[in-house]
Amino acid sequence: METLEAIKTRRNVRQFTEQAIPDADLDQILAAGRLAPSAKNWQPWDFVVVTDREQLQRLSAVWQGGGHVAHAAAAIVLTLPVLDDPHRKLVARFDLGQVAAFIQLAAADRGVGCGHSSVGDQDLAREVLSLPADREAAVILDLGYPADRPLAPLKRHDRRPFEELVHRGRW
Amino acid sequence: METLEAIKTRRNVRQFTEQAIPDADLDQILAAGRLAPSAKNWQPWDFVVVTDREQLQRLSAVWQGGGHVAHAAAAIVLTLPVLDDPHRKLVARFDLGQVAAFIQLAAADRGVGCGHSSVGDQDLAREVLSLPADREAAVILDLGYPADRPLAPLKRHDRRPFEELVHRGRW
Image (cartoon, rainbow over all chains, first blue to last red):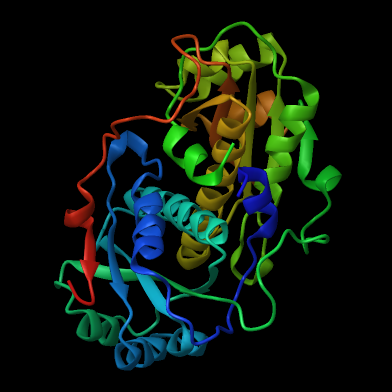
């Protein structure tokens, strides 16, 4: 799929068919996340990929709004080191946003939909994923084929108007 | 350009030719940033796009490592509201990372290279961009055609090994 088409196609998917994602496609999606930019090439992230149904169900409980993770074909948990410095925390989250975008666009390219869940219960996430104490689960991206309709470029995007958010030269 | 090709092609570019970016391409790159995902569709961002040489030169002084911005064909300054809540700050930075990724991949698709600068001197950034007091310049993405060689898929990526950062099922 063309890059600009993938950008127009990506949407938040929270209801999935039961179809599994082929290993090669899942690896390609993970590999895309690996290539995201990182300030000073820090790459603070590790990914934990989950495809076991029971484990996905347990994982879905780490956030009140994460129920959709239970029914996904796979989840990629983006983890970070536990950081103290507020500035480093911001940089790490920015980098993780870049990873998430690369993963979501690579998924869209493969016809795979992607949802997003925060992590509230860090202890449960650590237990389900056997994370070391110095790591935290920051974000869950859940993946699968959309139950409603296949991915295709959206005609209308629920976004602020272009001319409102783009300022020319100065505010 | 295919999505996965753009992902493999994107690299940090800091030296640019003097060639301007056609308005239509620059708008397409900005439009890609607009379509980035945002938790609860918050879209906390505004973009200020700068193409005036003198203004780019002034902007390049907001960060000690931002000298490359002076020589770019354009810069997109990603701004955020000034936030107090630490959690909201993290969410906003994550979203901004997604915007940055969308912009960088759309740029790569157009053969446009992209660099990145932090913002240290917030007062100077506000002055150069006429930002309101309740907004801050968070990140500068500078754009132009690479001076060294045209963009093409990289054979080798300076990244942590796939098998090191991808954990299957558990850490």
